[in-house]
Amino acid sequence: MKAMILAAGRGERMRPLTDNTPKPLLKIAGKALIEYHIEALARAGITKLVINCAWLGQQIMDKLDDGNRFGVTISYSDEGEQALETAGGIINALSLLGNDPFVVVNGDIWCDYDFSRLPEKPAGLAHLVMVENPEHNPAGDFSLQDNGYLHTEGNNKLTFSGIGVYDPGLFSNLPNNKQPLAPLLRKAMQQEKVTGEKYTGQWLDIGTPERLDELNQRLG
Image (cartoon, rainbow, N blue to C red):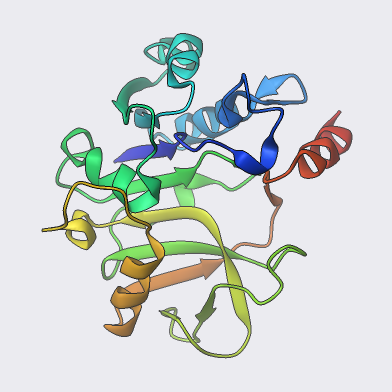
């Protein structure tokens, strides 16, 4: 199984920290944020990684190189100056990801999730890890049903963690351009093709300098 780490975003809400440093290279307790993901994936036996780059992407490539020091192999999907958003970035990297289901992780989250828990193949087109709603997303994203499927509507909505397993079929016949992931997931949910799980461990969306400081204080 391969994994993709999404690392192409500009990180507007993190400015001025991201003016000269890409968000995945911001430090958490002395270690670059993206390194936590690489190490966690390696522990789970997922060693073939794809990382997409755009804003200051060369810094990421220079920092991580081929991944050998982490015990992984890294391929890069360079999106140029303008990031393609989540779905666009995945579509652009499909030739590197192959024909089997793959893991995708948002590069701007921090968590202690064990990636070995993920299914190697989703029951439908996607399997998403959900978490309790944080203060910045109180309404949640999707509703996890008793049968394990996710719906766009329903009670007790949870927040999408940014961790998922995707079948390449979710992206088939789509143009290679800038586009978000949420509309594709909603469409698949309407067809009962997205399952989910609730994770209750540590998770934080590093979306603002304040949250970065909070996590550094917690782990420092």
